[in-house]
Amino acid sequence: GIEDGPQGRVARVEREDGHTFDLPLQVLPAGVQEGDVLEVRDGPDGVRVERLPAETRARRERAQRRLDALNSVPEDGEEINR
Image 1 (spheres, one colour):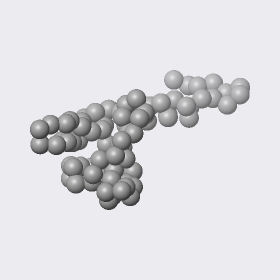
Image 2 (cartoon, rainbow, N blue to C red):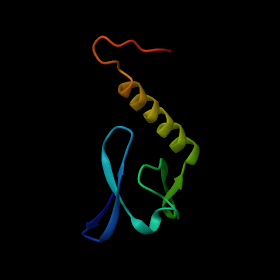
Image 3 (tube, one colour):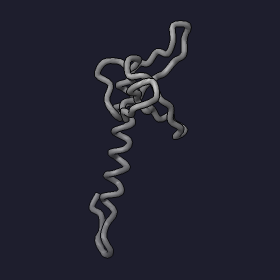
Protein backbone atom coordinates (compact mmCIF):
# COMPACT_ATOMS: atom_id res chain seq x y z
CA GLY A 1 0.00 0.00 0.00
CA ILE A 2 0.93 3.65 -0.32
CA GLU A 3 1.23 5.70 2.86
CA ASP A 4 2.40 9.14 3.95
CA GLY A 5 5.63 8.87 5.90
CA PRO A 6 7.86 11.43 7.62
CA GLN A 7 9.93 11.83 4.42
CA GLY A 8 6.95 11.81 2.04
CA ARG A 9 4.87 9.12 0.35
CA VAL A 10 6.20 5.59 0.68
CA ALA A 11 5.21 2.10 -0.40
CA ARG A 12 4.58 -0.37 2.43
CA VAL A 13 6.21 -3.66 1.34
CA GLU A 14 5.58 -7.02 3.00
CA ARG A 15 8.34 -9.60 3.22
CA GLU A 16 7.71 -13.34 2.94
CA ASP A 17 7.95 -13.64 6.72
CA GLY A 18 5.09 -11.15 7.16
CA HIS A 19 7.19 -8.22 8.37
CA THR A 20 6.77 -4.93 6.54
CA PHE A 21 9.08 -2.07 5.63
CA ASP A 22 8.75 1.17 3.71
CA LEU A 23 10.39 2.16 0.42
CA PRO A 24 10.37 5.57 -1.22
CA LEU A 25 8.05 5.55 -4.23
CA GLN A 26 10.83 6.71 -6.55
CA VAL A 27 12.77 3.43 -6.14
CA LEU A 28 9.85 1.30 -7.35
CA PRO A 29 9.93 0.11 -10.96
CA ALA A 30 7.45 1.57 -13.43
CA GLY A 31 4.15 -0.28 -13.56
CA VAL A 32 4.45 -1.95 -10.15
CA GLN A 33 1.08 -2.87 -8.67
CA GLU A 34 -0.19 -4.03 -5.32
CA GLY A 35 0.46 -7.77 -5.02
CA ASP A 36 3.51 -7.80 -7.30
CA VAL A 37 6.45 -9.88 -6.07
CA LEU A 38 9.60 -7.77 -5.88
CA GLU A 39 13.27 -8.44 -5.42
CA VAL A 40 14.79 -5.73 -3.21
CA ARG A 41 18.57 -5.44 -3.08
CA ASP A 42 20.82 -3.02 -1.24
CA GLY A 43 23.76 -1.96 -3.34
CA PRO A 44 26.49 0.64 -3.47
CA ASP A 45 24.15 2.98 -5.37
CA GLY A 46 21.24 2.48 -2.95
CA VAL A 47 18.25 0.20 -2.98
CA ARG A 48 17.37 -1.53 -6.27
CA VAL A 49 13.93 -3.01 -6.79
CA GLU A 50 12.96 -5.37 -9.60
CA ARG A 51 9.52 -6.78 -10.44
CA LEU A 52 9.35 -10.59 -10.69
CA PRO A 53 6.39 -11.18 -13.05
CA ALA A 54 6.78 -14.98 -13.28
CA GLU A 55 6.84 -15.34 -9.48
CA THR A 56 3.89 -12.95 -9.16
CA ARG A 57 1.89 -15.01 -11.67
CA ALA A 58 2.78 -18.30 -9.93
CA ARG A 59 1.76 -16.97 -6.50
CA ARG A 60 -1.52 -15.60 -7.82
CA GLU A 61 -2.28 -18.95 -9.47
CA ARG A 62 -1.53 -20.82 -6.21
CA ALA A 63 -3.74 -18.44 -4.27
CA GLN A 64 -6.55 -18.87 -6.80
CA ARG A 65 -6.30 -22.67 -6.55
CA ARG A 66 -6.56 -22.46 -2.74
CA LEU A 67 -9.55 -20.15 -3.02
CA ASP A 68 -11.21 -22.45 -5.57
CA ALA A 69 -10.64 -25.43 -3.25
CA LEU A 70 -12.21 -23.59 -0.33
CA ASN A 71 -15.19 -22.58 -2.43
CA SER A 72 -15.74 -26.13 -3.71
CA VAL A 73 -16.25 -27.67 -0.27
CA PRO A 74 -19.58 -29.49 -0.53
CA GLU A 75 -22.52 -28.52 1.60
CA ASP A 76 -23.77 -31.19 3.98
CA GLY A 77 -24.93 -34.23 2.06
CA GLU A 78 -23.61 -33.13 -1.34
CA GLU A 79 -20.93 -35.00 -3.22
CA ILE A 80 -18.21 -33.48 -5.35
CA ASN A 81 -18.20 -34.77 -8.93
CA ARG A 82 -14.61 -34.91 -10.15
